[in-house]
Image 1 (cartoon, helix red, strand yellow):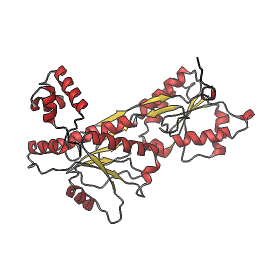
Image 2 (cartoon, helix red, strand yellow; image 1 turned 180 degrees about the vertical axis):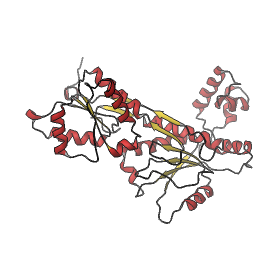
Image 3 (cartoon, rainbow, N blue to C red; image 1 turned 60 degrees about the horizontal axis):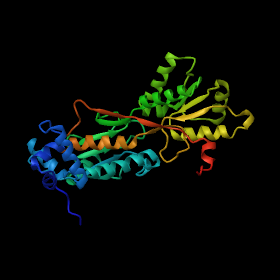
Image 4 (cartoon, rainbow, N blue to C red; image 1 turned 90 degrees about the vertical axis):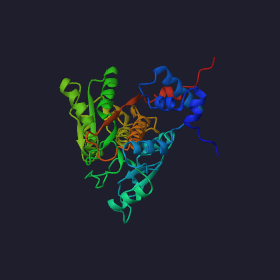
Length: 351
């Protein structure tokens, strides 16, 4: 087994006292910035990872809890009707893998807990978590209304992913849907699009707290001729959608989720070429593993890193319970242009 690199090892390699290493890795102001950076570089090159047992023990002692905490596991709580239903979302799976990788960098592992497990109650779940020494929880986005968790968080630090959890008001990390819509609009303006539309369902609009729709409506308020009335629905119907497309004549259509992008594309492609509407499809939530989509690839890795950083800092400082002033960290994304058929099929040039 590979021996774990300790703070004392880093101190010896950097030629400083172990206390200096501890302060530098916590970015303490008493250590000069150049010294902090040098020590962090040495620690990274040696493969040093913080020991959450030590960090939590120190935090517990500082808070007078007797130093009894001993957990290196974080809980990932899901509330879907079936145990693995959340895995049907490629983005949720991608975030989970990023969470596991970044948690490992902090010296933790992640264990999944299904809140709808047969026989499970909030009291029993709390007992299980405490008995396993789990004091940090990540809440997977909620599937349906009501988006409420009946659970006693008084002895846990918790971070919710996304905007779907309404109660309790926990710290959360989410994609910045307002900024993502603004990025889509900016790129379409640069392309000279004159009739821009947006399509979303009532459920998706609710799940993102109306931020995508709000950003689009703000643009429509400023430029009503360029931005069309948004298309909203409970569910999509091919005949009605195509009729709307022909009547409204958008030259760009922003879709709220990747499945809608693929559905609309299939309906448009099925139209005979002579009658096919000339509209560019753009998605604010491109699926990571489907490159043939134009739009924004959300920074799922950044979302996971922010969630783990926030949660482990809470755990290691023994900051448990529903926060009096919950924080929200917003993460944006990057633009991805779908390769044109010409670029995709053009043979490589040899010199």
